[in-house]
Image 1 (cartoon, rainbow, N blue to C red):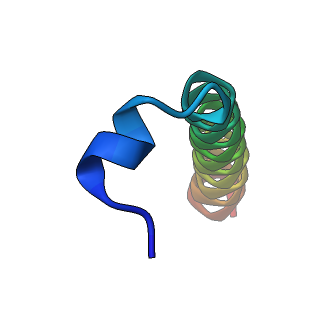
Image 2: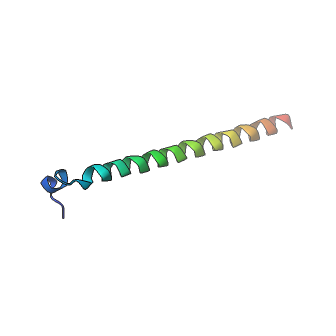
Image 3: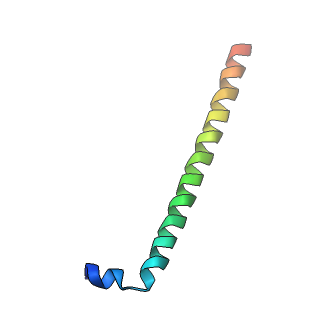
Length: 52
């Protein structure tokens, strides 16, 4: 188990935090991309159904 003092003195800490931030940014980016694609599909279906 890493103690708090050991953690804050750990040179790997900053690297781990950067990796976590990078992963979070990628996940958020994918989620936004998925949402935009879903909305585009929904809009296309809505327009198609209103034409018929």
